[in-house]
Image 1: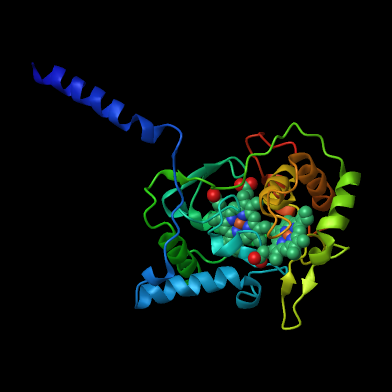
Image 2: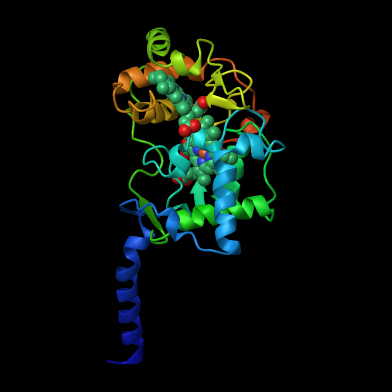
Length: 272
Ligand code: HEC
Ligand code: HEC
């Protein structure tokens, strides 16, 4: 065989071999590393600091948080719960294209998106000790997840977006099944030591209108799998859509920069 033919053949074989990686990401089971595997020394200290920042965000980063939430108010159990948008595996999933931004973004940019929207606050500097600590924690959480794959349970459960919301029925579900913790006015239940025991779901201390959780179907998907806390999976998809239609539309902080979202014109129907 001449060299040209050999090269064509090799290229063809390479193309076949690399095809799966170039198509839709593969899904792998979600491993959660054991705390005991956190190394000693500066790297281990950064991982622990990152976890502390993510679970106690309101208190530890007052300059960057503009509401009463912690990152883990939504990313349950320090980002290790499947279908509560876990952080496991994200170190090898980013950079990634996002339609809301209309471009490829880094994990740091994605983290800052949640600081500005979900936390109604301000971004961290990319080279700050705090951002590096958060990145160190997420990288440690991603141990064992191959680069370019997604874990099972990344993001939220799929929800049927053809379901039509009934916010009046949603209000009665809220009163019966959510208000005991999140308050009749969505104001949450304060912790006498500061912050909240049960976080607010609307009002000045909640996520802003530009947050993913302000979108009805995103909120419904989160609620269906995770709420009422400890009884996830008990609401029907229709009930989850109804209760989400009720609480997402209540008053909450504005996010002026949201007019720049979805620059390619593919704005989802439930975005505010
Ligand atoms: C009010 C709920 C809420 C809070 C609080 C919150 N997030 Fe999020 N986060 C979301 C939602 C919803 C998504 C998915 C949004 C979407 O894709 O539509 C998300 C997505 C993410 C992602 C990308 C996940 C993936 O699979 O691509 C990262 C990383 C992230 N958040 C980090 C953070 C950090 C760090 C904080 C704290 C500074 C935080 N989040 C606070 C709701 C929240
Ligand atoms: C037993 C108390 C309890 C009940 C009942 C409950 N939640 Fe929650 N909810 C929580 C806690 C606690 C968190 C935060 C998790 C954490 O910090 O670990 C949370 C988080 C949330 C969040 C994300 C954070 C935020 O404040 O926006 C939403 C949205 C939410 N719950 C909606 C609901 C809805 C809707 C219902 C009713 C169907 C409900 N919850 C019932 C305790 C409860």
